[in-house]
Amino acid sequence: MTTLKFRDGDSIPSIGLGTWKSDPEDVKKAVKIALENGYKHIDCAAAYDNEDAVGEAFKESFESGNVKREDIFVTSKLWNNAHKKEDVIPALKKTLKDLNLDYLDLYLMHWPVAFKPSVNGFPEKDEDYLSLEEAPLHETLNAMIEAKKQGLIKHVGVSNFSKEKLESLKGKVEEMPEMNQVELHPYLPQNDLYSYCSKEGILLTGYSPLGSGDRSEGMKADDEPSLFEDDTIKKVAERNNISKGQTLIAWAKQRGTAVIPKSTNEGRIKENLESDNIELSKEDLEDIANIGKNYRFIDGEFFVTKGNSYSNIYDE
Image (tube, rainbow, N blue to C red; front, side):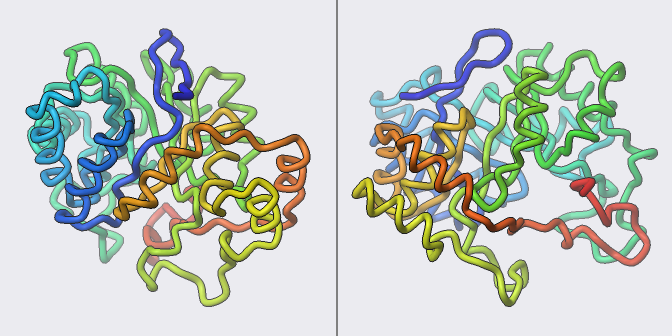
């Protein structure tokens, strides 16, 4: 299985199972199917409201004797209402309890956005937010690094961070993030961020690699494009006799990023992992590089209320 290496030499499998948008009953089955079929990387988050079901799947899979905890790479994420430094480790311990784990392989700050601790879900008004002066990103990250020192997590990273936000951490944190999880696909290759992170020794994980077509209608634009309907993706898939999903996953893997396609369908779960054995040609990669569209599916507008300071979280 293709892997990427952290700065300390530890490895993360390039292809993992994403669990966003999966309801508890479905996600439990999906995780068990994934582990039974060779997945070694499961991506979770407190905000997905299904970590207890994922934890049941872990418990049953490990107890079966067919899967060992030490062979599985598990990621989770700190939600926005636990950014105050005193709230980080309690939130992490809640995630560990839900997942039936003693430690995480990777813990990410989910967004560079802070809510008041009393806010569950998404804020409805400006007063529900904390500014980044009230809850500085570097203080949150240093609290996560303390959890690493305590053995609760092995690696520390962030998610949805721009180059500017990563740069702002320098000189303020005990160590720079080891991972940045962001939206990545041929319509949003994020080449500048990719180059910056490569130079800085920060790995990238791509979420929504297939375009996140199953997210709620309220998060979609009326005229948004579809990666699965793209002529270039169709052409490359047909040329290699593979699915369009496998084309997108193989593209991400060959760039040197991790990728976490979500599915609860057994056939798709297996098919997605088979992408690890696919090598796209130079012609395929050039065609995809010249796809000619630029689109971000997860625009972050759900964090914008009239008066808060989060109207441009990607610094674009």
